[in-house]
Length: 497
Ligand code: BGC
Image (tube, rainbow, N blue to C red; front, side, top):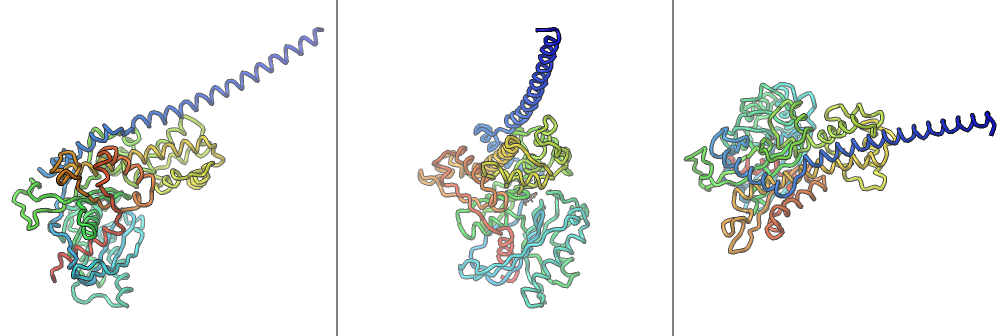
């Protein structure tokens, strides 16, 4: 080989080595980036794990907090509020009742026709109205005018242009924490679910509604003011007498149950003819060090308008699940390039809503087409790799599984408190050696529309209770129970009865 030949050969070797080194370098960098993704996901998985022993700790913590909340006001983060509902509708209610159901993102108006004489609900009609976003931080007057007008227009349509002349009675479902003064009145303790209308806090919300109705020419009075699970429990019990508790798993979350009056220590001397009262737990505010909290939950809480409040709700309800996923994906985008140019969209809070997250989680197409479409629409991603889409689904799964399992632990906590978890033999969930049938009414979209949530929740109930006891615990979906229940309770507590 001549000199020239040698020079060319050496040159080629150098170029080949350089290319190989560049390729190896790129490979190594991409391997490292991928390892970091795996690290973020793995750490998250570890931090939000819910093995059965941990769920049992949550069950016990719930029971302890329930006792503390029943012993004194302020004794626990669980408020355990009195509802003054000490009789449940029995089928003898009759007539037409209207109800207004103010939720987090929407408000529903209902007309319910009751047949009396032990008959069931003959008919009901529901209309839904979205709450305009600006109302969430408006004034008391604007909010109550809006809902009073929504109700008035509905009644006018139903009554062919007429509005009730004499004072007609109404059921009012108000899905925020209220300190009840009676079955028909109560003051707002604080807002949740993003509402910040300060001038309502401390006011009697029934009075606010009645004033707004009368200002708008609608002369009705609130006969029953109920928190949403209380309405759900009323209907649940009306349909199935084994119903002892009700749970809302939606944009927000809460539970209530039937408690013996003598167990409500903080209201010693509270006597009810029935010997019981429904207690509104406000369980969204439950807190325990046993809850598996991650750095994403902490950051979400820090940046929320109600920091240190609604800790359990922030882990299990629809307002927050999509946002937790968004935070984890944002971290992944920071350590890798798997989301390409769209990474900065992931820094926008609440850009990923829970219904979208559920749709991605339940995408069963082999190439995760739905995941790709949703991310393209909400985050402007394009050409995401299958690997990246799989990571998204994995994160959705972890967030939902934790949420559903924690919600299940909360339910078992209630059952344990009232002796229906089968742990104590005859007195608890068993009659003459046989487990007792126990029904828990459940309402709202996160549970009803998200099948994986339901699957994980049922699975956790069996994990905690064991097959034999779990098969006697029925989670019964109640549609529109919160509103229909308010109408039923308005009928049951009507002054005209
Ligand atoms: C409220 C509860 C309500 C629940 C479900 C929570 O944010 O504090 O009062 O029952 O949402 O709507």
